[in-house]
Length: 528
Image (tube, rainbow, N blue to C red; front, side, top):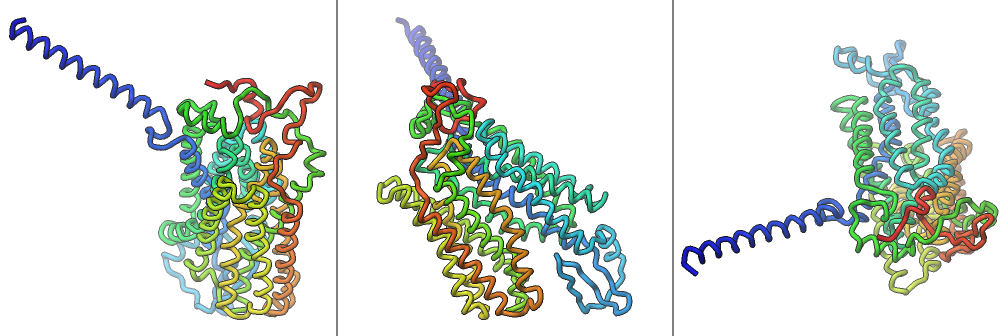
């Protein structure tokens, strides 16, 4: 072969090698782009990230009105004395600063409303009217159509309602009452929807860690308060709703783009990840999900009532501590905790940190075989719910000290974060097919905790709010509820799968059932 032909042949082989190399690289890139986010994250990691931000925004959409309300209400000037009268919640606080009239203050006051204390209380309380209505239906709906749809659409519509809150406020306070009730209606369905989603995406031994993502709501509270305060001071109260509603809307769009109902319906999941998930959950798609709820077995199940009672006690204590702490600090210790932003945020950060730490520890103990699921759930529930009860007993005797009071309240909230490793995800252990229904039942009962705790404190301290003896009664009640509630779980709780999780189909006792997969996907799940 001539030198020229040899050079041409070498050039051809070299060129074709580059083409081949580019082709292989293109295939690898395409395969990499088809998994997770540009191949860097698994589908479960994407789900974890979205759920964390979802619950942070969930809480932001819930409390933004509470934060903005103070700036939305006009300062009423007493023309006789020249003092400013500010309405704050159900209390009327009179400040002794002289009223001044400037162009800037007049413009600021023009954007505010003359809402009295009763109207404000009505707007704040209306959220729970809708919230309690959709806890149980939302959990069951997520079991039927899938948690991705229920959680995603509840956040989507709640975000849209948040964006039009300034318009409702400028229309009439009744419009705000209705809007907040509908907002609660949508957000009430979001919490129990996560459990059915967990049942199809997260292997049993990793579920404590995933359920800890729900406590990102506490992280959202810690972040939302200072951000909303800054927005109000620099832009105006309207910006709070545009900011939180806009973020919620953006999150909702991304949620529907990157999150799917189950591994079998995810278009970008790798076969390895799908097989790993379905193998661990034992959801190969050859069975059917129950088409009905075995209400009799659920309502007569001791493990279910252990979850309901403990959750009710835990949330009741949380509501009482969080909502009444500022009042206690002001009336008994002559110190308003709201004035210290860092101090008021620390318990929320602490609760989330404990949720994550305890959940990783719980899953490690279960995976390693050092503790059974039942032992793990009971130990962490006692730690998270019973321990705050004993702290309340200490508060009875040491609560007049600022240092002790702040330390006890902060520690009780910190320890309570361990519920994610305890009872909070226990519905997935005992009945993954009906975990949404169980959590919906528990959260419906606990939603009344805010009403009951506020009423209890009001009745006990109404005559003499500065009496420490009356507050001691409050702490005793909290101690009893915490300890009794957690004891119910220690006695009746279990981590064992219940037989009624897979009830026989009516009319066909031979049909087996499968956990987790939404009803509307029955028969469409096939192993690839």
